[in-house]
Image 1: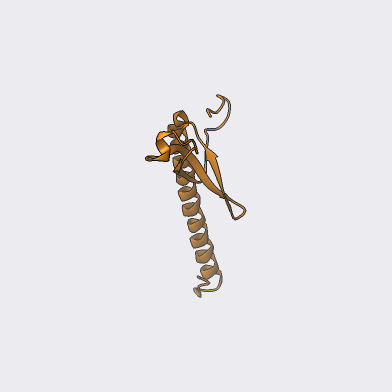
Image 2: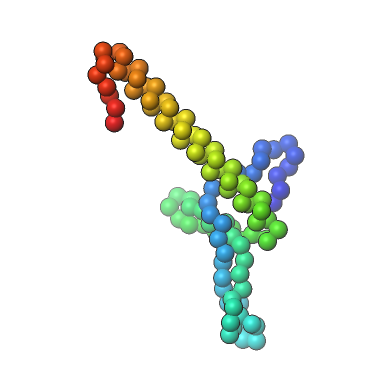
Length: 102
């Protein structure tokens, strides 16, 4: 799942989850006890939940990509809030102090 050296670091939106299931084989340990589990990425696309099953070796990369996305999202939200504050201040100055907040 590694990105190529010339591309930007992997960024993912969603949640890291663990899928648990029984395989259906009557002689398997999961038939009477602990189910099989595998890591997966869960995300929403156009109102529908999608799931990508992962290899255990990909989990650390996916965690880091999710962290990058959340950091970028926080930064974007802060930037947008600063923009709203600047616009509101400019409108107040243009209207002689009457604010247009909200």
